[in-house]
Image (cartoon, rainbow, N blue to C red):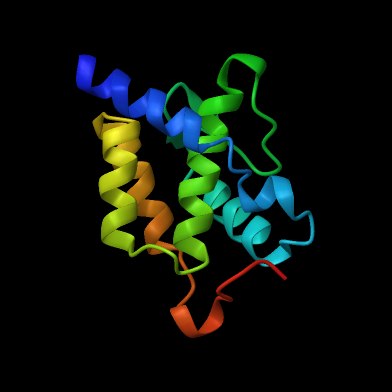
Amino acid sequence: MKSSMGWLAAAVVLAGCAPDQFSNYQATGFNAFVDKAAVECAPLYVGPMIITKNFDPPNYATAQYGVWLDQTSNLYYKRQSPEAYLQNISNLFPGDRNTASAQCLVSKLPPPEQRPSAPR
């Protein structure tokens, strides 16, 4: 448990580097991917949250959502492999339902040649 809290604390600090969705409102491809996964993988669990289309996190979960968005944008923009993403999400948000949600999200990922390497 202590190890999980350490990972979460580290992730929260790293979330200070604004996720692409927060720093680039023009990230339409990424935003569409997240919205599509939220619908097709419903319920899309991330820790205590269920991500929905056009999700707006509650105050208590803003940091966790930022961490998830950052990881998910790294996946979408080819900065990390699907395997690394699944491992990171499993470490940050342990539990079977979070793992199943992450696996579903990865299965909805467009092929690499259809994804940019940075927000546009």
